[in-house]
Image 1 (cartoon, rainbow, N blue to C red):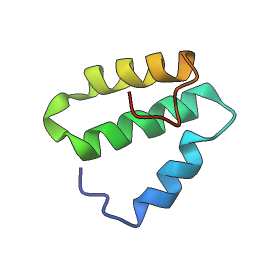
Image 2 (image 1 turned 90 degrees about the vertical axis):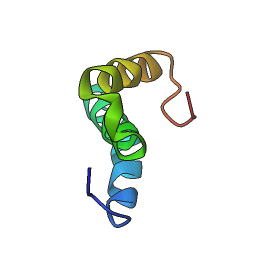
Image 3 (image 1 turned 30 degrees about the vertical axis):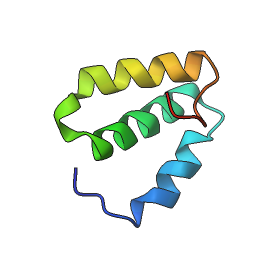
Length: 60
């Protein structure tokens, strides 16, 4: 995913958003930036888990 460094602050803000679905999407997007081969399904499931556990500000 070619979002580049300027997307970082926007993703950070979205990862702290009060709406869980926004946090999930931001975390999944960040995961895909780090590992584009992971696939969206894996990234979104991991993001949902992290949000549910309250770990959205930590590496999982």
